[in-house]
Length: 256
Length: 256
DNA sequence: GCGACTTTGTGCCTGCGTTCACAAGCGGCT
DNA sequence: AGCCGCTTGTGAACGCAGGCACAAAGTCGC
Ligand SMILES: NC(=O)c1ccc[n+]([C@@H]2O[C@H](COP(=O)([O-])OP(=O)(O)OC[C@H]3O[C@@H](n4cnc5c(N)ncnc54)[C@H](O)[C@@H]3O)[C@@H](O)[C@H]2O)c1
Ligand SMILES: NC(=O)c1ccc[n+]([C@@H]2O[C@H](COP(=O)([O-])OP(=O)(O)OC[C@H]3O[C@@H](n4cnc5c(N)ncnc54)[C@H](O)[C@@H]3O)[C@@H](O)[C@H]2O)c1
Image (cartoon, rainbow over all chains, first blue to last red; front, side, top):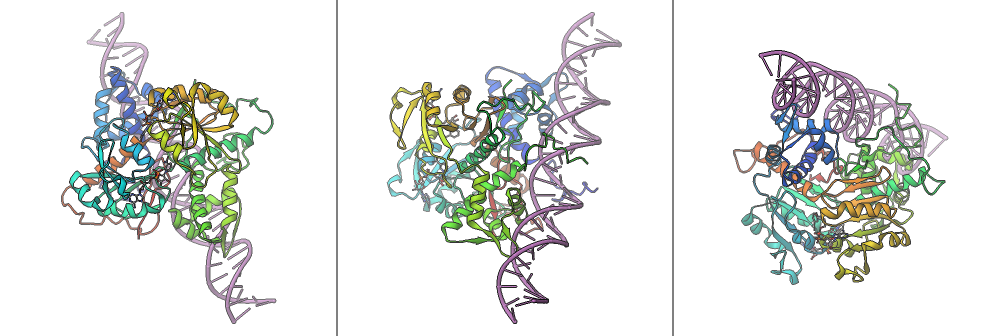
């Protein structure tokens, strides 16, 4: 087989699988917590348990960013933090703009300090005249028409869309025109963007519906008794039995 | 190869891939919008474009829930809606409880009508004495100590955790004790739960960090010019070129 | 009523991601 | 100094998911 010729041009020095990037972000948070507790060294086994993943997977994920472990000992917490931050591009601060200062926009603006920081919210936009100039979370709300100049002035790299669904595409277009290439979308619509723009979607309704699906499945599987008689053992006591959909690697660990 | 013996006991009548469930929820929303526009019939091609996925994938997803299409014509919108709702367990209403009525909890409580509805928020919990009894979004806030009785009375099936990270595990344990088997967690911690409980996580910091990663990648790839000289064509004009990490199937469509 | 066209449903192949298992490497102990 | 045990890093196998391409099937026009 011809894996030598990488389909995308073979330029990329080391391509990190998409799924691994999301997990690296989780590892980073866990490591930050460990550092605060004064832990200086951690093994792949310990870290994997704390992050809720398989230890082999964790090691492979870390291997994508380099070789920073010491055999027989483990990893130095600070080194890992620095390296993950480097790979995730957290060395440069990413300024965030929130568009749509309603229920959700207020919550986001008031939420000071995203864990692992590095994501200051520095601009807010809306169309509601009553909101103009009003500070939310210490930041004044600007009119959406000023988006280009304000984004340029504040060097916004990430835009968050928290408007009603009907306005999301228009807002998205404006963000793109303003030069924003990373967008986090809370509105339940599929956005159309140029190839150069990266969109991620947070869709609470979909999350609830996935939970509902599993709930229904569970109800179907045990139609008789109220309390499930058989614990439905799947053989393995440890590990990560839940596959989790597409959204996250896995959101929880089975309690021992 | 032995795909006959399904690893999990071969009981499941029809196992729907996890990734497909998430997409079905998206199709459902798109179909609901079409129904409101008076559209009665839709082809897999049309629906797939609206949902931002490959048409073959869409047909395969729909095939998991049954055979409801008419060759040469397409699908009847209402039939698809009914069937997807059935599979996702949306025929029975799922009552939702929100724990932690701070910034985010307020937004969630005030957010009336999740798209595609069926998820009424009927209970709110917190520890703050100032919030007790105060109605938020029309629902009075209860004390967390009453969680068991209130959840039982209101037949809560889904719990949403919007407390600070430090309280999340305790709240989770209480929800589980109260009989809640589906949990949506906004706190940036890995929850420990019994096997019978399904947890999904919404982690905004991770989302931002994934965006940051791609931003950094982009900056590295084009170190010279400001405006990227080559459009970096990847051959295919149509389709869904972005793989999307683990979280969602794909959040956006490349604009033509 | 029949043919041509349209669209579904799916078999097969390809590629990614996960997991196992183990050799290589390093530190500590004697 | 040498051995032993522990942990990393990764080669290889496996399974799932995605996408192509086509036969089956049904509709519409004549
Ligand atoms: N609130 C939640 O908990 C929640 C949950 C799930 C999804 N969502 C989604 O998040 C989005 C926001 O929800 P919300 O509850 O905050 O809504 P909201 O109605 O409270 O706030 C929307 C804000 O967007 C502003 N806006 C409207 N059009 C605009 C435009 N063209 N440009 C800029 N601003 C504009 C409005 O003035 C308003 O302030 C919606 O798409 C909603 O579906 C919210
Ligand atoms: N606000 C955001 O936009 C945002 C963004 C990303 C993540 N989050 C996460 O969501 C969670 C909530 O964020 P927030 O900004 O709403 O926080 P917040 O501090 O505004 O609200 C937290 C609420 O939880 C309550 N609480 C504390 N301990 C509790 C307990 N044991 N039982 C019940 N209630 C309890 C508090 O009284 C408070 O009302 C946090 O974990 C945060 O990291 C929030």
